Image (cartoon, rainbow, N blue to C red):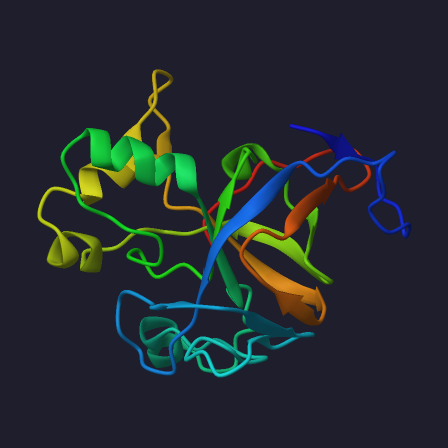
Length: 195
């Protein structure tokens, strides 16, 4: 993975992209999966235009019920396409958008990024806030899938594999095939936790 220290410079041939967008997804409904679309528009501080989870404050139903004034740290959901490959190899038929992500990527270790990593995706910037916390809805989607997305590592710690969440730091349009450039925040780098 190619990463750079924080910069305001646009990606260029001297700063190669770390990965690519495989597909993009949005839905105005609070369903589980999101259909593929030809592009999404990210709105600064809000999320994906027209998506049910867009908003300055939390939009996920369980979080709204707990405290609707919480800031929305889950404006954009990204999943690495390599995870979908692993799930298919294990017998689960999960297509891009099937797990409710807005952006399916390839070539980026999303789970290895630190809090505050900035992803330039198309002409937008998403700042990574944390890990998606998979819930029972995943087993409702496909029985047995949850244990593939939440497990215990060799050190006994819980590993959450269902992608990362972020906020829109600069609005713009994102399309399949767009390059993704990663800029790390200043050290110390904090590991991602669930948001």
